[in-house]
Image (cartoon, rainbow, N blue to C red):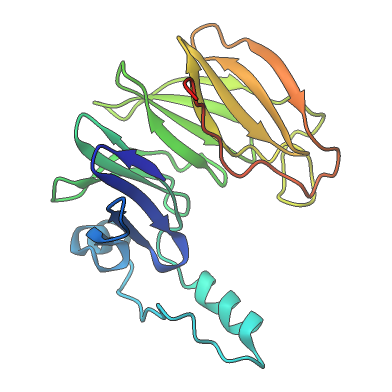
Length: 223
């Protein structure tokens, strides 16, 4: 989710869909990732049959829903803006994609990422991506798409994380102040990372159950 001056950008991950809604709930813009001709050509996928009503029947709903999710083309888990341009992050394609203005453009693609989340862009034109399973915070140059540095953010004793099974499922990313950012992980915890020094700061442990993970983070300075 990203709040713009006249609306809110949201992702509908299972539909490969991004929408902009007004503050009154009116749909202002839509982008259908599975229908992008440019992305179909670059990534080699075809259009998909969408089930926007999520109608899988009552008897086999779980099976139908699981099959539908596996049919996703991009698994979009982030939408953000930078200098009036709109970007989304595709977990399944390890890519930050500019979707507005059209045509789309692949800004960062790094196939060494493992189940990544939370692509955001700093004021200095750096792209931050949570390399979720490998527990690093990767910093890329927005213009070239090249990796600048990889910051180790492992705060629990697991080399490779696994959702609901092993500690360190790194998800949730928000700017705190200056070069400091907040990162979420599992078992549910939030910690500070300085993207310039690479130092890990304060850690707030919320839960000890490895199945409980931070999903998203936001920093509010004024109440």
